[in-house]
Amino acid sequence: MQQYKLWIGGKWVLPKSGKTFPTFNPATGEEIAQIPLAGQPEIEKAVAAAREAYQTWSKMRQADRSNFVLKISAAIKENIKELARLETLEHGTPVCDVFGALGAASGDMEYAACSARSLMGYHIPAIPGTLTYLRREPIGVCALITPWNHALGMMAVKLGQALSTGNTAIIKPPSVNSLIGLKFAEILDGVGLPPGVVNLVTGPGSSTGDMLVRHPGVDVIGFTGSSATGKQLMEAGAPTLKKLIMELGGNNPVIILEDADLDKAVAYHAPRQYHNAGQHCSGAGRYYVHASLYDKFVKKFVAISKDIVVGDPADPKTSLGPVAMKEHRDRLEAYIKSGIEEGADLVLGGKRPTKAPLNKGYYVMPTVFTNVKEDMKIGKEETFGPIAVIMEAFTSEAEMIKKANATRYGLGASVWTKDVNKGLSFVDKIHAGTVNINTQALCAELPWGGFQESGFGKEGSMEGLLGYTQIKMVVLKYE
Image (cartoon, rainbow, N blue to C red; front, side, top):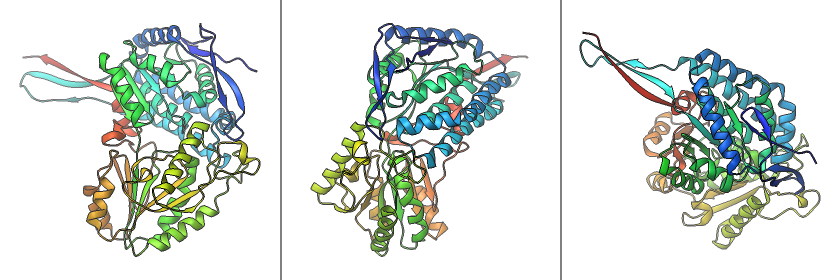
């Protein structure tokens, strides 16, 4: 079995402890690699390397920094076949989806590199005879702790923003996607970055990630993951008052009003429910459908769900592969069990596949619940899987809005209506970081982030770049 190493200070090193941990193929459950487990000595080396590199990287010409990030973007494209193979092998992403996701990762870095050249401060004409202006500066060493559902994409968007604005970084990829993280480090090593500008350490969040967050030499935590883990990171980083940029959980409402174009709404949301095995924070958490359309919506949604092809993610015909890990499959099955026990109507799926080859992997079949009540577990919590949760039908829009907002999350929402004015009125009524009307948009130019327990700060867009900077005021008396 191949021996893998950590990438610290521009060198490939083994952990002092010699310890490793396994990563698995979710389609078969088989072990595919042993990954080096970074401990405190490796964290100390990575932070020291990043802090030393910051002294020169932060003072480099913006154009030169941006050119390095553009090289990384291009290198992702050059290595896209190998990255796709690892993403499918280690995460279970179907090949029909994987190239688009990796292309987006390259695009995110390209956007950050180009947009960073437009960042600037501004003059404040406050006091006569005095020049006062604000300038943007990098913050320091960033610990980028990325999630397992879009492993390379999240590494790319965070790293592009951090590097382009003059920070240095330590990446901790998700433990279940460590191979693609180490491949990314190999790509970074090949573009000629100064030693220590980027470092990559592998290990579980509970140990390796925790050591990074607590380290006094780390200035910024860029994290995407669950709200529960986000709270733990806030507590761990509090003694050193680190800046936190956190994109956390969501339970996004999709609202189908009485005058909605039902065919378009279902055609968009039903396939997306199973994209990446439902493992994306931007997906639908709860469907609120007007009573006049409810039965038709369910019928159309189930019909599309039945046509979803579940299978080997390496097969081009597959549109729904396994979920990323055994623990997550078990968690999803617990949600399904709770939905049945609490009285929701299971109209599709809900059972583990028993026929080969799906019986060996971490598969969850397309599952649809209807008539879900607000106090049910699957109505309150983010399932994060191929489970559609269709709430009870509504007739009162005012009551439905109260229910849609009755959540500790506030990431996104979608509203479907033919009345543009009515759709826009929901922007004021829905408490979420993004409100989509008759669509859903995600791309490098648009910021993504939520309210309440969905986190704070934005990823992507100019807003994401600003998050990795701090403002300094300069005052000069010239009269």
